[in-house]
Image 1 (tube, rainbow, N blue to C red):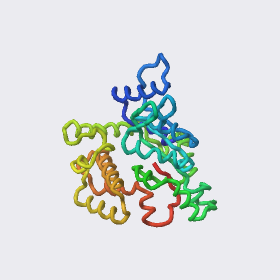
Image 2: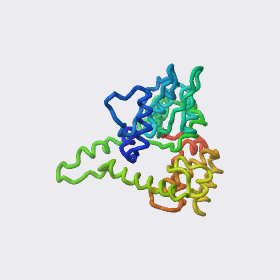
Image 3: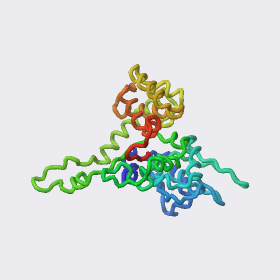
Image 4: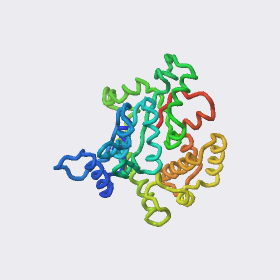
Length: 306
């Protein structure tokens, strides 16, 4: 449900983005003759039996895959560890480069591929690891073997690793009770997508303003290179100490280090802060669950990667 709501909190498509998406969908044969520009961000959720050609593109004639069809939108891979490993590994280059280059005997095609990748996994093969009812029948070794289906290099390319513990049934029922009795609102009243989108639009505007002012060459924090990061994403003194400690304690790779900086810069933008502070760095590090797990030992009670 969270993944499917993601496009609703992203900024509206620009004209250039709409042209990109429309061109890709037209090449894939997904546009009807009477349809104009695609007006909404795409959401693609392929089944875990998808082939490598279906995910990154291929065939004869060459057609774009799911990662390109989700360009400027969301690519959701549910039950990530059920995908064939070779299929998942084919995502490495697209996630790094933002494009898919397909070479065949008669043609070479390059498709754009910059979706937001969201993936979800169960905490263990039986799905109950960490459940308060103690229903899990998996040993620690089995849980580790299950998690090992996701390679380190691919995991390193995912910015956020977030744990989602089971939801209390009482919390699920609370919104249903809102308005009953004296009519008071539920303590768990949800926030509208429009309210969240307003904050996202404001943060994106700050990123675009830095680009237009010549501070950086990328309009999105996710695309900031090393020089741009050095200009606008280096934390203050206390934040630098937090980052240095995390790099040493967690053994972060160079790729993970830059991702922490990009996420911290985005958190600062969401806060309206011109500087990246220790709190932003700490939150960005806290969102790399599997790095912390690798440094601390056994798997956590429940986890999902995103």
